[in-house]
Length: 108
Image 1 (cartoon, rainbow, N blue to C red):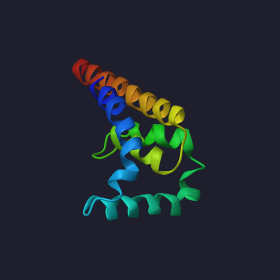
Image 2 (tube, rainbow, N blue to C red; image 1 turned 90 degrees about the vertical axis):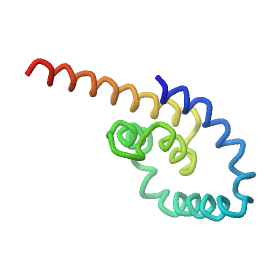
Image 3 (cartoon, rainbow, N blue to C red; image 1 turned 60 degrees about the vertical axis):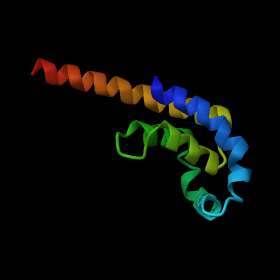
């Protein structure tokens, strides 16, 4: 739930503040380059869309959480409803998988 709350609070800040942050001395060039890379590889990412973003958030690796998921969705130009739905679903599925895994381990 904490991830969903953080995502819900910071996603609007990202969307509204993106153009402003792009003009900052140290953050701007990196953010602009990240956006350019996302657009450059958009044709590779677009076919996976909703399912790909859900799977990306579901996989429990460092840097694949909900906040990174919404940033990636925004950078590749997905609609807001698709981003928030995919990230919420991926996070819920990950939580359910962890609960199932802990129960399975406890029964062994």
